[in-house]
Image 1 (cartoon, rainbow, N blue to C red):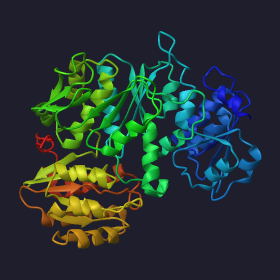
Image 2 (image 1 turned 30 degrees about the vertical axis):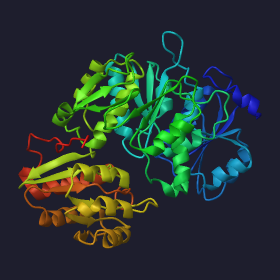
Image 3 (image 1 turned 135 degrees about the horizontal axis):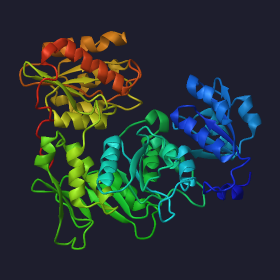
Image 4 (image 1 turned 90 degrees about the horizontal axis):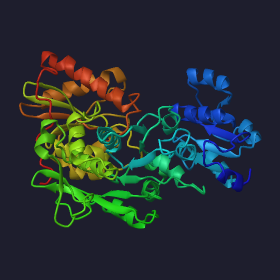
Length: 515
């Protein structure tokens, strides 16, 4: 099929009939792609190594074909299909044999986000326009900021939904018959890499976008840090109104400076210091907006206070930064400061995100299993300095040495878990030799956290914190970070008995992020 024909496919109401599309992967994202395309009348072949039983049963019902088998090379069925377009699930890296094969042959290669943008006008607003998009990425804080932003927009009277990498495919929201005013789209670096391949005449053009921060992660997928950074930078491509960036992270500033945006888009900075005009920040313990008001030079609008955040367990420095970023995005859509404040009061963190599990015998047990990379773990350690730190898992190609040297050196002790324990132990030996290091050496998943908690209980004393912040992925020993967190919580409760969860004060420690 010619590129000219593909360029016409920028609406739900375009002629998609007869388009041959190969869909790579059959997770929730892959199924949403197949379901959308068959509804549009395309000829769809799904290619996957493993097929969920329910999805496999549904594919012929919706009119798609399925190939299940090894993808170490290009299957003959895929080669013979002669696809016009391949839509890949985010798990397929640039070096995957099928992705390399498609690029060598010049086959159009999309991700689910590009497809969703092309068909975003299935359900429109009262004025006939599709929902605005707000894009959110970053090494850490994506999910929390996505939820915060959606909560603020709803408080402002807008129909908004958190979608994308957060769990709900964007295509499912696009096809929701109720429709939305705004889709708040969490994007992984994998999804953004595919966006970087866009050649459409109508590429994704968000109302506002943010990259929260940048640190080593997913290097096994991208190959190099530069490639990871370049993928993240695509979040700002074609932004129309507000490019929100982290003033404390020079990489995000450079992304905005180098971005190809729509004429008139503004750069909006956030950090934990006093904001300049066109920024959001903190003045004397008050979170303020100096970006979205007429008198930016001499005035600021109050959003909330550190005291209020502290009362909710949201005053850790990285949480305050996430709140400021979300507030900037919401303000770009005219949500009033008092509505933002109300939304923050109602907000609750996800499970396994700096979640206090128990306080017993003077020891606080904290589950931050969602800290799956060094950058996230550093934020947790900053919130709980001197903790007994539970660390380790799959490092995803990232060197943990800088984290150990910068934050781990202040830990009371380290308990190391996971398949790559040797690298973590070696990092402590080189960079924090004074920190006592213990290994949970059982290979049996059901016993790992029992051993960890017993070790921690023997170390921690009155006033101490035991912190699960692994700085690594979980798939070596657990099914997910949530499974890892649940097993940790169960082991804690088994160990401390009635001391678990019976303390009314479940807030995070008091932190003044301006210090």
